[in-house]
Length: 138
Image 1: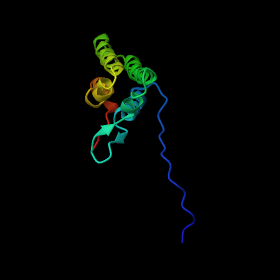
Image 2 (image 1 turned 90 degrees about the horizontal axis):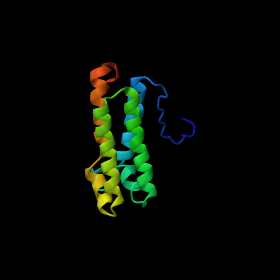
Image 3 (image 1 turned 120 degrees about the vertical axis):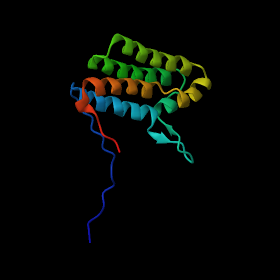
Image 4 (image 1 turned 135 degrees about the horizontal axis):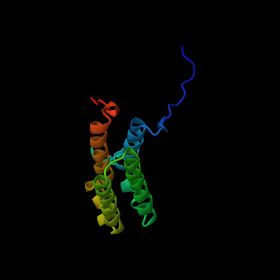
């Protein structure tokens, strides 16, 4: 017979390095947290903190914009072109402007996922310029 069972805790360790693989892991973790960390009960619709925090007027929009800007900042650290950084900034700005409109902005968080779009841009860059960071999913 085994001893008492310890409750399992969620352990998430993010790399702190400046190498492309570490940046990729951090950006993927932030995107997961903001866009797909929870499921709507009874459905298979993913939501994240972006949709939940966005319900808090002004402060929620500031927090989610700052986290979106963090992803753009990490992209700059990876050396993405000014064109890609501008596109990513526009995604965050559009999401922020939508979020300022009561109710419409909250509904838009389910449709327009700026952080997922920005992660896709970063992954394309990494797959092309740093293929060793590619993660095989399956």
